[in-house]
Image (cartoon, rainbow, N blue to C red):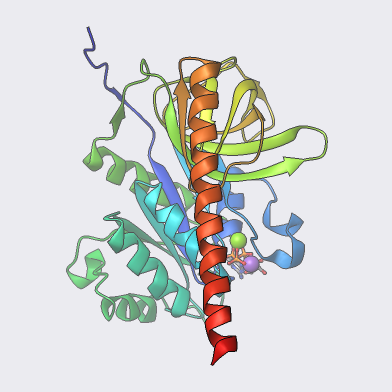
Amino acid sequence: DKSENLQVRPPVVTIMGHVDHGKTSLLDAIRKTRVASGESGGITQHIGAYQVEQNGQKISFIDTPGHAAFTSMRARGAQATDIAVLVVAADDSVMPQTIESINHAKAAGVPIIVAINKMDKPEADASKVRTGLLQHEVFVESMGGEVLDVEVSAKAGTNLDKLLEAILLQAEILDLKADPDRTAEGVVIEAQLDKGRGPVATVLIQTGTLRRGDIVVAGDEWGRVRALVNDKGEQMKEALPSAPVEVLGMNGTPLAGDRFAVVESEAKAREISEYRQRVTREKQVAKSAGQRGSLEQMMSQ
Ligand code: GTP
Ligand code: NA
Ligand code: MG
């Protein structure tokens, strides 16, 4: 009997926007930690994933870099998400990566909430932001639309509760549910080889519950979950739907954006990953053969 046990799950929220408009600072202020100040040059180089609680309700956040070079990360962020928080600095207004973020959110069919940030600055102009957004078909409430917008300051900590309430309101409308009883599935947010811990994959669980000891496949790689670590560095026995979690125990590092799933046996996991590795190798061979072919063509002309 495969009857479903659908339960309310936390919203997954991606923070997007132009470089230096204050995405990481806003998330820091919400988490009351200091991520942005610890970054190299204050530029987000990777996707961070965190979970916070507001009045007992959980919200999962994915931070993305605003630098022009990180288009694919923003696109991936939008795809893995329920709600996009578009951060626009009130002293700078709508800029190229603001527009790009709007396009990613729209392409993914994800509702936008606008955080008009840096309202503590004397030159802040929230109405200029609203008009700028209007030109890109983001209609906030005061302009007769339905997009929620909140004036905030990450620096002063202004209106952060209001922003979280707007997120929870939007989440309620979306009626987000998942079945925690299923075997876990999700998406790889990022992965790296850690000197001490080996391959570490940050995964967003989208359905089911992931447990220590589970056998998992992600992209070309597989492994048995040795440890699950949350964003506070705490070890966990299990990770529920919408939770971002570090997975230790994979044999290699999967790629950001890879699908992630629990399978029933090591034999099955090995079979899937060997098949995928063969497909990847064949693609590479075909690609380099193509390159060689066109090089020979060039030389013979
Ligand atoms: P990238 O990840 O590099 O795209 O940047 P970001 O959007 O995460 O911006 P970040 O949080 O790194 O902040 C950029 C700069 O703006 C930093 O110097 C912050 O201190 C400053 N800043 C962020 N929020 C505010 C705010 O509300 N008010 C003021 N005055 N400055 C802010
Ligand atoms: Na920055
Ligand atoms: Mg950042």
